[in-house]
Length: 494
Image (cartoon, rainbow, N blue to C red; front, top):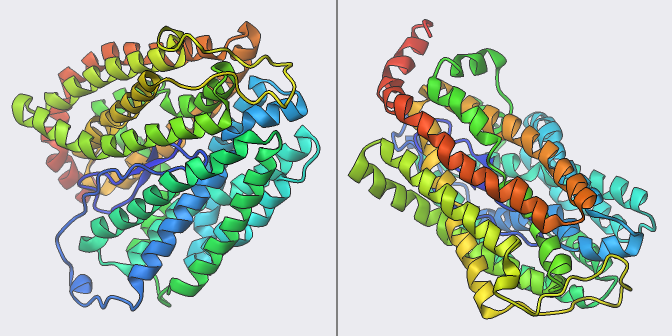
């Protein structure tokens, strides 16, 4: 189910980065917090808003929502795919890992092509025409063929976010981009809230996964037409916007990355990322709901929508809550809030993914060898819906309110985009690719996906709460040194 995007506060390039979130079925991307540099340059003052940019912005929001949906439909409907081809959790882990790896490897490739041939053209190809691959996945008759065709479709869907951000940069001046990104994410979220339960109706058909692929492929083609009609790309792209595109796709200079590790807080964040397991959770929780709890795909889609509503509120709420902690406790307030968040999120994962039978005694797992006509055995209780909403409500606080602002607050301005590309595109992307494979293999080995999630996803959050004590010593010092380090880089001395 992950793909959230957060625009780092104080980031002079205005670059976004992937953070724990979702990309499952008509996924909605939590709105996040957008802060941009409000100082206008001469170029900004001379900026003339292009005609029809609101329509273009809405078209890009539709495109983002549909691409997120394509990237996650296989995981949402995996219980049906599992039954159709006799698969296990290992194969689900492979699908989740494939999506993460595609983002890491092909994101930069598409960014380079967009920079050379035009963003609108490449976005039309990867968002629109690439939908034929998703349609093709619906007609596969073996697991290997599905993996190949759907893997190719994922190569296209991972390209949309950085290219979309680049097009917005051409439509709005820098001081307006907060409004622009907010509009795109609002459109994407609203569409996702509607599409997720609608697609879930295919869960009542054993071959519903095929219909879901066809539906998303057709919608992808439609979104490509919307881009062609409504998006007007300027003939020239500024150097700053080109750099934005590359940083959004996870590209950076290794020489700049090496400088980051002179900052103790940045060095300490790398080990912390090994304990952030939510991206793995979102790849498997649909399987737990549909198969291990016996709720079926349709109920799983309802639960996912409830989670995403909570997550959207959480993304907005995280920044406000963190600001309150900073006002009360100073810079250490973000560290304290993350520790509270980690304990709460670890606990709610354990409750919803492992101890769920305590809240719903009717839960009966669907046996692995059950006939494909057995689509569900029970329905979620209202109490369980409330727990899932709570999980979403807690979910984004730690990153939107704590981790991302911490990185932005200690990183010299010139290295801001590099820090986010390195930490969250490369390091975290690589970690979660490996974790996804491990979760699937371990779940099949021990015979329990819920137990695997408890040990491998929930418990690491408790450990992370303890690990965060290491930041009390250096974080505030690094915040106070940010301006000095920025000046040293300008002088070539850092």
